[in-house]
Structure formats: structure tokens, C-alpha cells
Length: 314
Image (cartoon, rainbow, N blue to C red; front, side, top):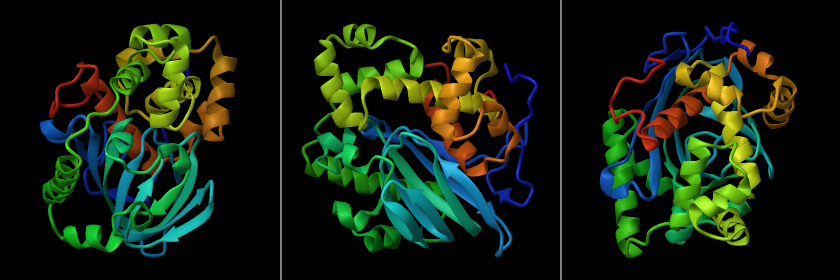
């Protein structure tokens, strides 16, 4: 299913971190320091060169809340709260229920981290359900954007940025007494990576709770109902395969999560706005970057890939 469709690339942009075997852009991303692993899922840096007057039209689709810091580029996003335009800024991005259209003009630099489900709850941060499909300045969630931007020297190396973000998060964790996210959320996150075709009844049993308890915790920490979370995870895995940033050995398993091709087309189109074939045939550089980072996180979480190990698509 779509095995012979070669994912399209955008030749107008040049990713500084290189490309995959198939020419798809790569970011620099890694797992957090071990002491921060309960709260942070991933850190990333994306640097892309493009003509000053070139506007890249793409999208974002993330399954967790993010802290995103834009150090260069003019961004525009179509959010649940309306259109947002921003230059250099630190933004809190809630998880997404579907692809969010974005446009970026000129070269851009993006630095950030992905929060693990339940981290915002444990650290008394934003309620992710109130930020579903939305972006907001970190000013609105208690962390001045200007302070975050001041922490990151524009010409620094990616690891310097990561260390600054980790130090900021470490202070927050220590200040709050290092409360761990709900273990139910951690178990459900694992299910979303390992077997997103699992029934909610089976997922509740695997988490050791009644279905109603699972639904309450997941709605609180993921911002969506459990069924929606697993449906989104299936689609994100398939999208990663279509963009060439997934382990090809999992292709058949990913396809079997759908009843048939029509089921795949229906769900994928509903979440991404276009069919799987159109998705593969249309350049998706920014979305591909986030999909690649998620797949690296997923494979490491499932112990199919060691941190720092060469990824199947590289």
C-alpha cells in the first residue's frame, strides 16, 4: 500500500542538518538528559536556509505539547483560535487533533522540546486540553518569552541551546519537588507507540484501571479521549512511513492497523486534510521534520533503537 510512492521534496530549502536517504529534511534531535526523561520526550533544533522572499506552506501535527522557540523566520499558523503571526518568539503549543496549516517566510531556526503526557499536569503548567490545536506566547503560561529568547544565543551550537533548555526545566522540576507524571499516562503513551490499534477496554486493562479512570486521566494529560489519541498515533505512524522517516520493517504492521485501504484513506484524510497518496506526492518539509523526531523518540521508547544509534532512514 503506497510502497512505490516516492515522497516529494522541496528543492527551494536547504536543511542544515542534512537529509535522509530519500532526500527528506532532518533536524537535530535527541532524548533529554536521563534525570529529565519523566517530563521531556524530545529536544530538537531545525535550521533551514531558504530565499528571503520564499514562503513555505506546510503544516504541523504533534501528539504532545511543545515549547517552541523561533530564532529566525516569519511564521504564520491557522489555529483553533484563529490565525497567529510571529517572528522571534517562544510559544507554548498544545497537542493537535489534526494537521495545523502553517507558512514560513525566509530562512528559519526553531528550537524546542516536547513535553511527555502528564508533565504539564505534574508541574502545574498549562492544562493541555485548553490548548488543543492552539499556540500561545509563553507569556500567557507564566514564562516570559523574552526571558527564554535571552537564554539562547542566536549563533550558539544546538547542544548549547539544549543545555540551556534542560537547565530551565531542571529548575522547574526541582522547584515543584520533582512530581512524576501519572503512571497511567506513561503506560498509555507506550501503548500509543506500541499498539495503537488496541481497543480502549484492552488498554484500560493493560494500564491496570477501569475504563472510566483511563478516560479521565487521558483526557486530562493528553487533551483528547483515548480513542482519539490512538487514532492519531496510527495516522502519524503511517504518515512517517509515507514521508520515508519510519522503519520500513514496520510497514506491513502499520498497514494492518486499518481494516482495509478505504479505512486508511478515510481516517488519514480526515486528520491530514489530503489522501495518503497526495500526502506522499506533496512536499511536507516541516511536517516531515516533526514526524522524524517523533519516530526517533518512539523507537527509542520501545527499545528498538538506542539513543545516538543510526536511524533506519538515515
